[in-house]
Length: 112
Length: 112
Image (cartoon, rainbow over all chains, first blue to last red; front, side, top):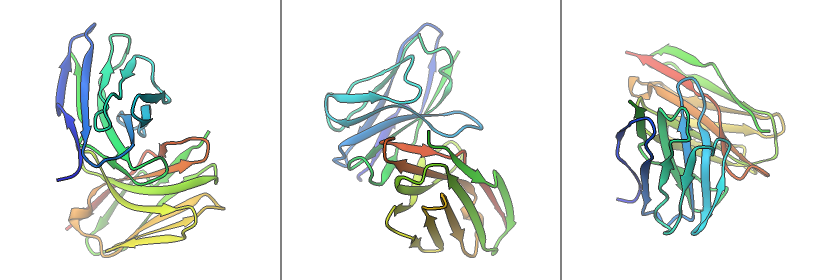
């Protein structure tokens, strides 16, 4: 089945730790995105990548980092510098910019 | 900066009713508008994509319209069913933004 796979589904992090969220797609899409969703707010863009080895900051990139070494993979690292990391994280991809976007099932990160 | 507003924030209807969800955006220079569905704790499912040159798109019981000049879109759901209960999100992709800007969604409950 073609699609976007996010793992893990649930993730718990101790304060001061870095954690990495996985996002893999087999749709052969060029563009990939990371969004954060908080209750009562719309999705907010963290980072996006239009092509391998290139990525751009979104609206709330502080405390996060990404890499795009392979077309199919776009991992997100939540660093200890992110002051309020508890949220639902969504990864998406599209064939290119300005085409239909498809989303994964999300990772819920909780700081304990 | 593009802003997307969805009205109402929540809607409760009896099964079988036709209903309309509204989405408005502040910058009419968009490439496309996309409607998504989100079930609790899940990722987003793409419902309809309307390109800026189009006026409407239909899929089954769903019909989405776009009036770019007035900055508005509507999602019409015919003969609603309990399985339609979910949060519906509107997102626009515009020139100069490169990525989707989301509204906060409309939470729909269809009761049997």
